Amino acid sequence: MTATIIDGKAFAATIREKVAGHVARLKSEADLTPGLAVVLVGEDPASQVYVRSKGRLTGEAGMKSFQHSLPADTPQADLVDLVDRLNRDPQVHGILVQLPLPAYMDSEAVINAIAPEKDVDGFHISNVGLLGTGQSAMVPCTPLGCLMMLRAHHGSLSGMNAVVVGRSNIVGKPMAQLLLGESCTVTIAHSRTRDLPAVVRQADIVVAAVGQPKMVQGDWIKPGATVIDVGINRVPNGEKTRLVGDVDFDAAVQVAGAITPVPGGVGPMTIACLLANTVTACCKMNG
Ligand code: GUN
Image 1 (spheres, rainbow, N blue to C red):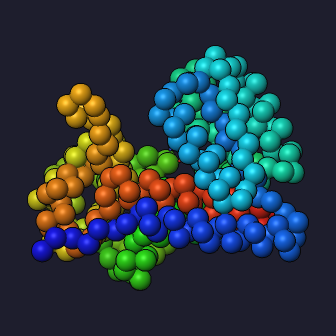
Image 2 (image 1 turned 120 degrees about the vertical axis):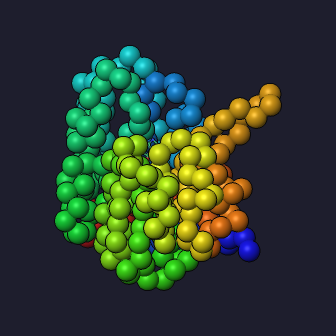
C-alpha cells in the first residue's frame, strides 16, 4: 500500500482564500488593509524567486505589499534604518527580512531590530522566548505550515513519537516546540545523532529539515508513519535541474502512511502562513 499524499498546494490555497475573506472584512468593517513589507539584500536568484512570489500572493489576498531591494554591499546600519522606518510605518503590519543576509551582516542583530509585533517570521528573540515558554507568539511560517498539515491529517497528535531531523532556528527548533505543545514525545536529531536510521524508525511523525537531498531513506520510515518533508533542494536533472526534498520520496511513499511531496507540500504552506501571520499582526495591532 502506498501513502496518502498530503496536498500542501491545495491546503495552502484554502488558507489563502480564508485570509482573503478576512482581509475583505477588515477593509469593509474597519477600513484596515493589512500590509507586508519584504526586504531583500543582494541578488541571490532563489531569494529573488521567493520574494517575488510572496509579493504576488500578498497582493492576490487583497493586502498591501511593500518590496525593498537593497544592493549586496548595503551597510548593516542602512538596513537597520530601513527596518526602523518600517517599524514606525502604520501601513506596515508585517516585516520580513529575507535570509540569508550577506555574510558580513549580523543577522541576529538585524532580526532583533524588527518590532516583535511585526515579526511575521517569528524569528525575533522575544517571539522565540514566547514560543519556548508556551505563550502566545508569532510562530515561524514553515513549522506552522507543517503543524497545520499534521493537525488536519491526524486531529490530535497527543502522545505520538515525533522525530525532527534538523536543529535550525528557522525550522527544527520551533517545529520541536510546536510538537511539544501538541503533547508529542519529541526528539531532535541532527548530523551528530548516533544511528539516525534507528532514531527515525521510532517515529510516528518524521519532519525532515536538513537541506540534504533524499537523505532520509525509505527503510528508515516506520510503516504507517507520517512524513513531512521540509527540504527544497535543486539537483541536476539531465540538462536542467529539478527540486527534491530531504526524503527519498519514491521509497518512503511505499512505507509511510502519509507524506508531503516536493514540490507541492510544505513550500506553499509557508507562504500561506506568512499571509495569515500578517493578518494576525494587523488585528493585534488594531485591537
Ligand atoms: N529564507 C528561507 N526561508 C526563510 C523564511 O522563512 N524567512 C525568511 N525571512 N527568510 C527565509
